[in-house]
Length: 88
Image (cartoon, rainbow, N blue to C red; front, side, top):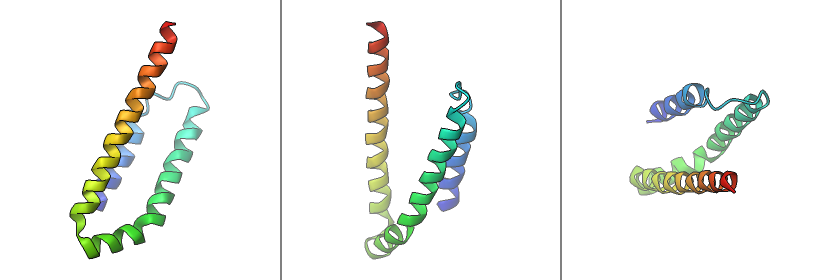
């Protein structure tokens, strides 16, 4: 599962965000954000691994799915806010 997760993360940054990179400075920001994401996942890995050993991986996947739903909805609201602001 870890290899699938890393493959998905790095594939999405390399392919899907390539078209988003319009300003020249945004490439550095994307690289830094990816670096902080990998650093945070490395720091949390022992805690999440211990929790997964004690309670089972089902709860780890469930928590990750809930976080993704909140993140996606937050991005949607930001997108809507920006679109509405441009119309006014």
